Image 1 (tube, rainbow, N blue to C red):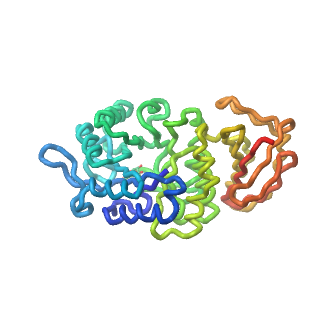
Image 2: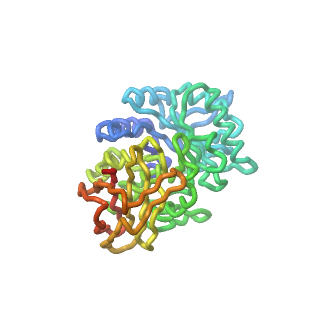
Image 3: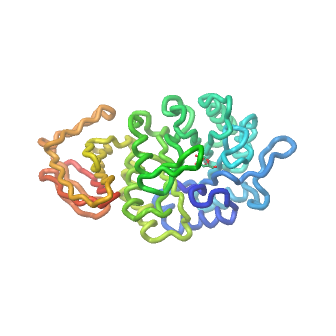
Length: 370
Ligand code: GLA
């Protein structure tokens, strides 16, 4: 859990912004809710010195990265940085190709805790070996750093990255919209539903220490409150990293309430680390289930459609069987008490669930055996 500069600030990053975001992460209650990393994305780079060591852009980071890391650590938070396996980053700054060990050593000296490693300008590189080189370089540098693989799912990282990085992007870049593709010419960024649909078949690859990354959050970046709540809940259910991408200094109370929602975060952080599965698919209504510790479950009802829906779920008509976790429920025999974590409502699986789901919205229940 953390924050990343890219979705809101793009290339406009500097040390003043990062310090203010660290302050806001504490003041807003996000740190207390579990957010830890402050990640500087693309464009922090200056050039390389005569020996090939990378420098921060001296205009944007005049005090240097070490001083910034000290400031962030002083707040009880961690600092992340961005590089690229190719010659240049996606925004054209120096990449790490041929400088992997130097760059990892530099990050370690600065006190960096997280490395996001992108895949632009990598012609001729084999992804599994390029990412393994940076993994080995980080290991050799001797400072623990979370290693986040960002090659957009192009080369099926879920099949080779379990022992290479701690998370891997499964898709191209996110865009703050519900069900759209936003064209940038040669590539498109994707809304909430297109990213969700690309997770099909990937849940068996995720688990503690190696996660499917659905990209950074767009909560607070222009979607409706129902859409933001659904986006956040889906990312939490699917055990994706929760990396906020909004301006924490100026966010609304509604945005803060979504990002710091204790019960949703508790489901995300459940120690079993089992990614939710799609349980029922009824067109616009889909139901996801995430097995939790102590025989509990999180159940999310998603309304993909443009109209609010009254939905009836007769639990006893549907068995739930999950081959991955080896868990199953026969609702005819087993009873659960549920709590609607966003509304606070309560009930039991002994009777059918009659619920109203907003357009582009979710209802999330936490089921406890009784
Ligand atoms: C790629 C990544 C994004 C972001 C930009 C920065 O598009 O997927 O997350 O890091 O590069 O240029």
